[in-house]
Amino acid sequence: MLPGHLPALVAAIRPAVEAVKDESGDILANAIRRNVLLNVEKLKTAAPVLESFTADKKIRIVGGIYKLKSGRVDLLT
Image (cartoon, rainbow, N blue to C red):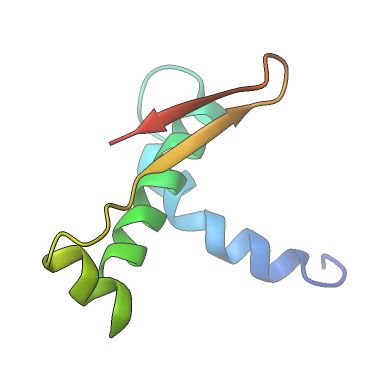
């Protein structure tokens, strides 16, 4: 059993890990990328504000992966 908020964090990340577990390549990198993309899709459909702003092209929601080593952010569209 994990302490504190860790079970909730694991549950939130689980769909991304499950989606990439059979893909080739680095499972961690693949899961991180998939988690970002899944959360971008969740935000795009978050009602009522974000969903309508996205549909009306008032905002654009994109994901990014921060690279701690280089300080760069790789944007995902």
